[in-house]
Structures are given as structure tokens and as C-alpha cells.
Image (cartoon, rainbow, N blue to C red):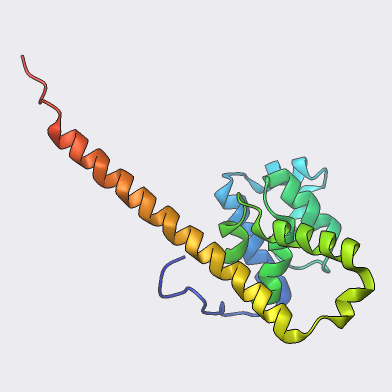
Length: 165
């Protein structure tokens, strides 16, 4: 995803097209062929091809089977469609961000139950915003740490004696 397309909706915002883009991108990220994914999903190749092309009805079971086959985040695939950002599925395939959010929500529901209805919208927005602000801060700190390490590695490489005979 380049800076010019970040946050810009794809040409087609049809749910099937969005899911198709997300699925195809994750499959390519994993370096898998359609037949490899179909086999891993225990599905006929043609059925998988229709699923990947966005031609089939929304099927949560297929999404979860695809995620297992590609070691990706099934909830990110669904959320990618919801927010119109197929690249979300690729960006969260390894870190399972959307599954983490879903597990947290499930846990919150189990502990709070009916009290969820009593929460004020401002409280919810404040909590969600704070969580994403913390994630952004952690991402920035990680970027700074990686830059520091790269700079240090470059300095070490320059200080090393040149190989000679």
C-alpha cells in the first residue's frame, strides 16, 4: 500500500469485490496458489475460485477456513469489507489485531453482560480512542527503535576494519 492509496476506497466498493481484493492479497502475501489454498480449505478448486472472486454469498465459514489455511486474521478479512479497506487484511495477517479486538470484546461482553447497554457513548469513544492512541504511540516507538538500530549497525559497519590481504 503506497501513500497515495492509503485510506482511499478501491474503485469498487461492492462487498464481494472488497472481500475478493482482501483474500487475493493475503493469498499472495503467503505465496500460495489458488489450488494450494483450496486444498488446505478442503474445498474444490472451482468453489474456492468463486469465493476468491467474490462471486459467492458471504460465508463466514469460508472466511475462517481461508484464514486457517493462510495463517491470517479472519476477523480482519470481514472488517476489511466493513471499513472498505482490503489492505487491512494484509497489514494484520500476522499480528492478529482485529482478532485481538474481537477477543477483547467477547471477554468484555462476558464480564459486563447487560451493563454494556448502560455505557455512555462518550465513555466508549474515549476508551477506544485511548486504546488506538496507545497503539499509535507503540508503533512510533518501535519505528524509532528500528531506526536507532539501523543507524548503529551502519556505524558499526563503518568502524570495522576493511578486509585485507
